[in-house]
Image (cartoon, rainbow, N blue to C red):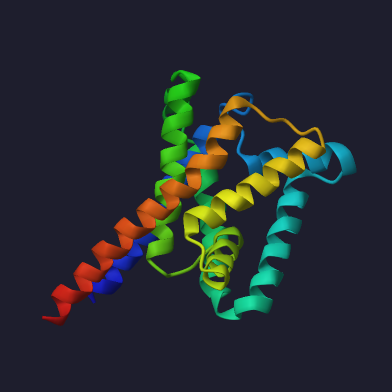
Length: 207
């Protein structure tokens, strides 16, 4: 029972951290836009449809690829994860004192804290193994198939999105470059930390 409780704590706390980080990054879009958001905006500017529509299309492509390569990665937890991220992002974004506090920070502080929050959040919730969003499921699947580390796979995907945005004349800023090469490392680091803690908990329960 303790193992289940700890996994759920990791899952929810990770999603909350990720949602906080997303809200932090939305306040510095002209300084630290992620490579993914940069491409979504570029697609919107060049081909129409809303940014949300492009996010849905790309996530659908990720989902279909994962279903083809390793359908076990797409579970009910995937849907729960997507719903909870949406709910948590809106919930945190509606709390005035949190958002006012974020906006009062210098851009570079927000970039650092937001990046760490996103990386830690994804790493912690993924380590719980209760569900993964399409993008993380795609990275994990490609990582397994190629034997690349999560970090290398994530950075490669971020650079691919960055290149796509560049070719479509999308918005690329200083922070976009930083995020492309650091978020993957943060995610992998926190996956390893979370996994070790959970494994230690399981070992203690076994004894």
